Image 1 (cartoon, rainbow, N blue to C red):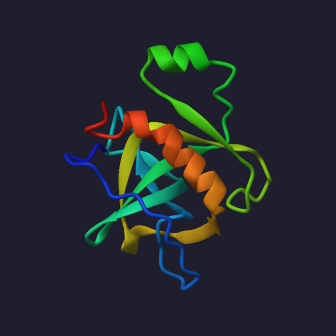
Image 2: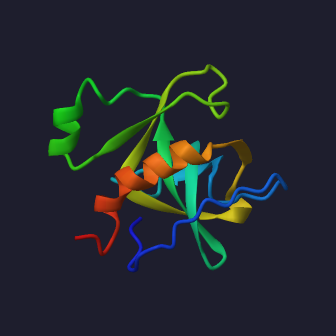
Amino acid sequence: MWHACRVDIAYDPHPDGRPDPGEVVWTWVPYEDDPSQGKDRPVLLIARDGATLVGLMMTSKDHDRDHEQEARDGRFWFDVGAGPWDPAGRPSEIRLNRLVTVDAAEVRREGAVLDEARFDAVVAALEPYLPGAT
C-alpha cells in the first residue's frame, strides 16, 4: 500500500521485543491483486507513521532471472542477501515499489536486525520509488 505522503525513513532497531525500523519481522502481507488474501512473510521495517509501521516485503524467490518481465509488470526488486530471518539461509530480495503498512500488534515475530550498511543500501535503491520522488 502506498502512503499518500513521504515517509520519514530511519534506522532505529531496539532489541526489546517490539518491532522497529531496521528490523525484519514476520507479518501478514496481503496480495496486490486480491487484498482479502495474502501470506505471512518477512518485511523489512523502514519507518514509523504514528502507531503504524511502514515496511517492504521480502522474498527468497530470485527475480534476477525474470528481471525484464518483472520490470514490465511494474515490480522492482533489490538483492539484500541472506540473513537470520530465513532459517534456510537463502538470499532475499526486497520489493522496492510496494510500501506496506504494518500494525505492530500484527507482527508475528522479529526475525533479525538488518545491519545498517545494508539498510542504507536498500534506502538508496528505494529513493526513486518513494511517493513524491522526482
